[in-house]
Image 1 (cartoon, rainbow, N blue to C red):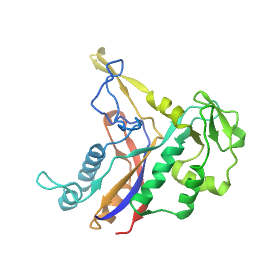
Image 2 (cartoon, helix red, strand yellow):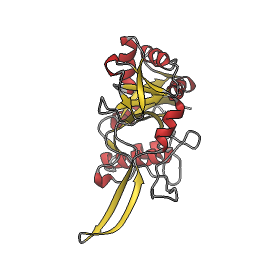
Image 3 (cartoon, one colour):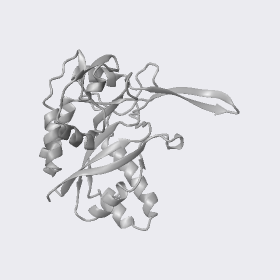
Length: 270
């Protein structure tokens, strides 16, 4: 097995990576979800397909060898293994800020564990700071926040509870999670995630509505993380391309959905 790199995916615009399922109710198109947690995910095949399309467009068939080596051909599998992208941060509404970046202790612990499982190295101070955050005791009656000025904020339907945290720790975790972090209980977070935003879509013919449907979206500023197991060959070229500019993932590119920034946060030794 080659080396593993872990990347963060930040949704710059709303995203719809469809599951192909409906809920037999009002929502016609559902997003992909983890079968255990129920959280939104980007399945490996969807992520790999989006990257391959991006590589083919950027390289313009000049480097079929790179594309085929990484992603494979009809006759042979690619040399890079793509896992599913898992949820790390989800934006939630508040009366004091535009939004908070919500996560949970189990999500943080899962993220930290991936570095150990794949022997991926990241800045030790950041890892230690994330571990400090994952020790916080959260209950269902409130949401933990770290800005004393915002201690009375209402975040979704919960009151913020201020917890003092060392500034260095906060500075470190913000490099991964972003600003205005809110730690939810697992129960409350699952409740929020069960009801993702739903957007009405409409097909017009000569100005007349012909087909109205509804689809779930993952809102902008959601963050995922993904481990990718790579061969050393073309690794530098791969990293340069996927971190160079925004990449479109999922459906509805014509209306600006799915634009994402990707950056690498750690590598393993071979």
